[in-house]
Image 1 (tube, helix red, strand yellow):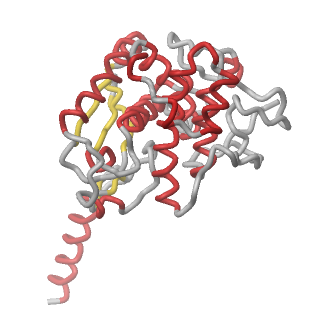
Image 2: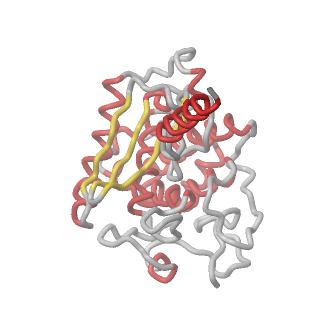
Length: 292
């Protein structure tokens, strides 16, 4: 009897152990190191609020982003695959790789969140593409860390995606006054696109704030300085600051390479003049620590 009980317990242990991996989704939560959001239970709220998102719009936005990044990924040796999980309530997105397949997984639960605008959803897909294309600083042998994926989304992706759709830019009246002032100061040649980026940034930051129970504002950037680059998900305000920095940076991203070192990254993005200098256009020190 005792031997039989032990065998049964071992069998259950094996089945359970084999059925759940670090990358599995349990109760609507994606557990993955390259996800847009930390683990959360916001999937439980799916269906209670309508933000106007439909499956048709969901697919259209994904198409509008991937059309630009498929050839870039292909030139760099990969094959961009976007998995579309419209019926899944997971409030997240994540990037993964399998051989030459550079994968991005998008979920309807995230797209339907009340904080997420259509442009905000496009920037989530850009963030996940940024794990593949953003480069230094890395969190694994191929994936850019969270802050760098945020930087890529607003420094490179948004300007590529929306540069040819100027007629769809944001109405000035919808832009936060502080954000509008920054666009008027730093992006005089393409203010309309900048306004659109700022609105998308605020959309994402509001979701991040809701997750953490905090408020974000363009008026209150986080000027704390980490002593070592933080690779996980920064706090909501810090991430908003990263979106703003990417939006205002006037250095052109080189899509022909993935920067492997800080030296390479400095050639195609904005850095503070020194490790002790705050620069609204540079990677925020609340997550990034430069070497000099």
